[in-house]
Image 1 (tube, rainbow, N blue to C red):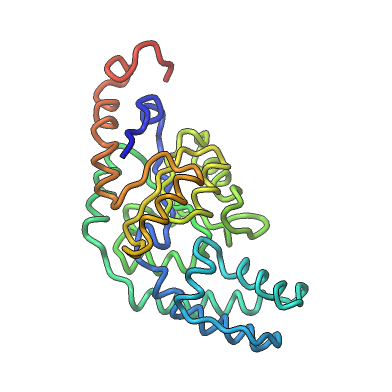
Image 2: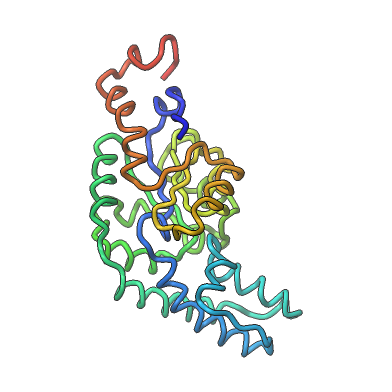
Length: 263
């Protein structure tokens, strides 16, 4: 696993965390709920196509439902269909299901708490804020990443979008008062890595909640998309970067980390 450059860690001020499949294992249960709405939507527009939850996960990981629905409608030859009622229904169904099924993940919470001693934590997601709210409460992460540090490509932007569009990362950096290079992004999906990299954020790939059989392929794809390093857990990321962050914070003038590097 390559070490992150010292000069990068010297300037990082915020840990920018993708949410679904990264902070909590929400993707599989989300698709259990989303597939029912997706298939009802396809039936409504006259498409014969249907998905299982796993097929939908593989086809749309890293994208929000609006983007997926528009793509499916275009592939069905109906590009102008109004997807907004279905976006609202999918948001309701998935948010309720995740709030019921997610549980805290103690190793992730512990690693994030260690990061919070040195960096501000924020969430940058394609998912709706209402969905994120239920997930953060169910996983006991509300205190570590409160609502005012969650940014949604669905709800936080003037025009909703989805990763790999970098807009949500650029928005988050502006709201947090940092340059993109001062935010270390952590992503589990290729669209997410592309979004963060396009915004100018140094990015790490996280395989924690990626199925074991998909990890090798996902790691290669995340690296190809621009991830600087790949980790298997938040604790592995903490082991990789916290010693340098602690040294930086103990040495505010940068004399131990670098020589002659501007802060």
